[in-house]
Each structure stands twice: as structure tokens, then as C-alpha cells.
Image (tube, rainbow, N blue to C red):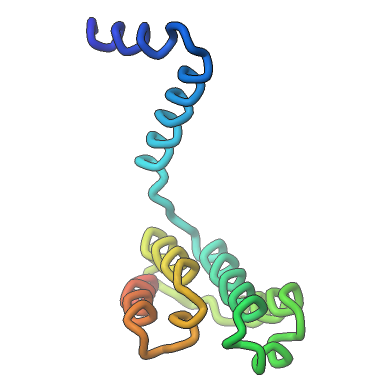
Length: 133
């Protein structure tokens, strides 16, 4: 208890900017520790569609495919979301794996995302394979 009291006294003494920065860092680190995500099946699909469409319309590697995906990011999302609604038959869905899958795909560079032989793509594919068992 005494150590906590000393930490609080240290944080809230003197320099208010130091206090704000310290408290903000503590809050962010706590949020990071407890931010392990999980998606339900619909959320996972929507988030993955966002990643696919964003990469398609921001990466040069996908210029040729843009017309196939509707010609704009918003139309791409509409098209893929309507297609995924007809394909929602996962019996044993893992929401944590889905969150990791979407995060992994989002973190890939454009080159890795569109090169299915890259190690980054293969790593994500291994994670994504665990989503629907």
C-alpha cells in the first residue's frame, strides 16, 4: 500500500505536463495489455472486407483488379459484404483467431498482401486457417 501511495504522490506532484503524460502512458499501456480482441462472425467478415478493399484501392499492385471490385473502395465493400452474407456457414468459429487474422492481414505491406508466396502472407494464412475449424 505504501508503494502505491508513493507512486500516486510522485505522479501528482509538481509538473502537470509530466503528470498528464505519465497518466496517459499508464492508461495506454493498460489498454494495450487488455485489448486482446475478438470478433463475432459478422464483425470479422466486415473487418476483413474493409482490409481487402482498402488494400485493393490504395496499393499499386491491385490497380488492374479495381474494376472487378466495383471501381471504388465503397462499392468494393458493398459487393464483398453482399457476397459474404451468402457464405456464412462456419460451424466452429474462433473470434480470437478472426481478430488475429484481420490484424495480420491489415499489417501486411502491399507487396506481401498481394504476393501469396511471401512469408508474411503465409503467416497470415496460417492464422486465418484457424478461424473456422
